[in-house]
Structure formats: C-alpha cells, structure tokens
Length: 302
Image (cartoon, rainbow, N blue to C red; front, side, top):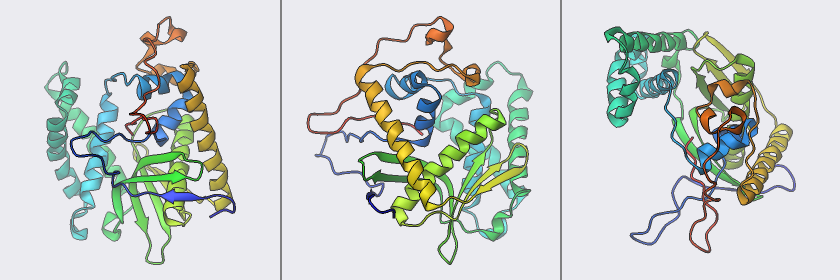
C-alpha cells in the first residue's frame, strides 16, 4: 500500500439496521456511474439521481444473456464446459431471465416469429467466439459476477461487479471482463480500461495485491486485450476517482449537472429531456439524503 494512504476494506455484508427498518445504502461510486459522469454529468443525473427508466436494447439484453451463460458454464464440472453444453444453456437461461424481467420480451413484440430466434442465434455466435479465446475446462475461477466494495482513506466508497476473478496457486490475480457491445471501438476501449482500473484499485485495497493482469475479452470480433497495472498507476487512478466523486458531490449540492455533447449522444435514451436537443430536464429532485446522522445515499445500479 502506498505511503500516506489508508484503506478500509469492507465485505458485502450490510451494516445492521433496526428490525423493520429499511437499510440505507451509503453513496458509492461504481465504474458505470463514474463513466457516466465523465461522459456527461447530465446523463449521470438522469441515471443516478432522477433514476429515469431506460428501455434496454436487444444488444444490451443479449449481453446480459451471454454473461449469464458464461457464469453458469463455470458452475459446471470441467469436462462439461464445452461449446455444445454452452449452447444448450442459452434458451433455458433466456427463459429464466425473461421470467425475472418479463418486460424484456416486449423487445420482440413487433418482430415476426424469426426475430427472437435470430437474436438467440447471434447470442450463440458470441458464446462460440468465447471458446475461440480460451478453454474454460482448464480454468477454475475464484468467483464469477463478484460483488466488491471498499472504502478509500478519503471516505469514498467504491462498489462494483467483476465478471470473473482468477487467482493462480501462487496468488497472482487476474480480472476478466467480457465485452459483447458494439460501441465505437476507441471509445469503448477507453471506457472498458477505466472500468478495469477501477476494479484493480478495489481489489488492491481489499487484498493488498495489485492484479497481475486485467483482461478484456471482445466476443464480437474474437479478440482480447491484456494489461498489467502497477502500484504507482493505481495510486494516480485512485486520486482520479476521488476527484470524480468530489465533482459529483459539488454538482449534487447545486443541481448543476451540465450536458456534455459527444459522439455517444446518439446512443443516449434521454435526448428528449436534454437541452442540447431542445429538451427540458425534469425539476431537480435534490441530492438524496437519508435520515439525520447518516451519510448521503445514492444507490447505484451497476
């Protein structure tokens, strides 16, 4: 751990609350919400403060399905982690996910009978591409879809979910993240590496070990990107996260979440409310505050 910095590692077990009382989660920074604020403070406000609903795209839901299949794959015995078995998991997993979130099936309401089938075929192609990158029968991850949370010495709480955590017998840590989206490659890679460095900081503070490798697996084109961080870099990145959080708090106090136009505006669900597109944001609801004596709350969805 770098000289002059401290960290309090926290487990995912919630603080006890009085019986019958709803537990208030502390405000925390997740990689997705930090990226939102860097991209556009107004987008951050819409998602994290106003919590405006967003209709997912078929590509986003497909990504969730593929992640779920790969997570389930690693719960199987090694000799069952083969392409045919993974394909068998797709339709049952889609049934399971759509039962949990029936609104997702509405994405296919206007399609003909082939629409959903073709969409599942495209998910199959992504799963097949995964097997072109590595052999899961030779791996035993420590965890998949791992919830991590830690508090920095400055008091900033970091929270997120890691797709897969591999730990070698000798203790080296590898963070693996699957990418299925179709964002512009240069922008997408920058956001993805920001996310991976975020996880590297969290794991470093939780375990006292700088991850040996951050690995991005791009299933759409069957490529991967590996990166090795070092401690001085993570110290600098930690300061970046602290600066982002302070900027969020300043905007939260004043309600001054300004739009920041970019190429990514074309993917935004909130153009109708954005001043850059002639829209008007809803009245600012104020920065969410819990009961007196508790810290501000902003329960983000990752």
